[in-house]
Amino acid sequence: MMPGILALTLLGIAAALLIGVLSVLCTPVAVNAQVDSESELWFKFGVALFGGLAPVFTTSDEPSTKIDAEPEPGPDEDPKEDKPRGSKKSSRFGITAYAPHMLREAPRFLSTIMARVKVKTVNADVEFGCPDPADTGVVYGVLTPIALLANTRKSSCITLQPDFSQASFRFRGFLAARFTPIALLVPAFGFGWAVFVAPRLTRALR
Image (cartoon, rainbow, N blue to C red; front, side, top):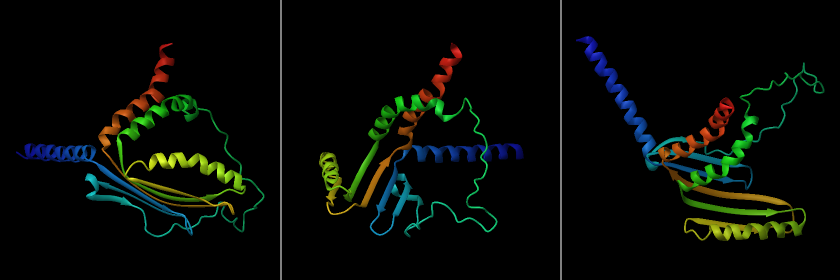
């Protein structure tokens, strides 16, 4: 009697976990990101399941603090003395060996992913300036057609403000998108197979 009840309980738990995983994979995931560099860099990112009904992750609303590039040396440390580095050992599993395959497959992979991600809102306000005003004009001329093309969509609003008086960069933007995780599994599997598995199979069959 007890083994049967235990087996049914485990089967019920497994079925519940399977239904939960499938519900997450087959329902839309809402993603939003907000960036503001007006005073100091501020970034917020959030993910919500079931089309935005169940938030599962969000960053803090507080502005990010600045981090020094290198920490101050301690009292027992010599700032001029470099610590010995271990020798880098080459490995056949190193990512460098797969770089050519990644570069070849990346455009198709990214285009497939973007085709399956629905962008709901894109708002961006960019103010920039180069040290040379002529360079500012060139950059503005290159970016303007891209912004105009993006603004043909009702969900997009991108503005460019060139600053010909000084070198500067300020960016404020908001992005809201949604996607269905199961729709991304096939292209992700195809990319992984073409980059990591197919080359090794080819070498093994030679």
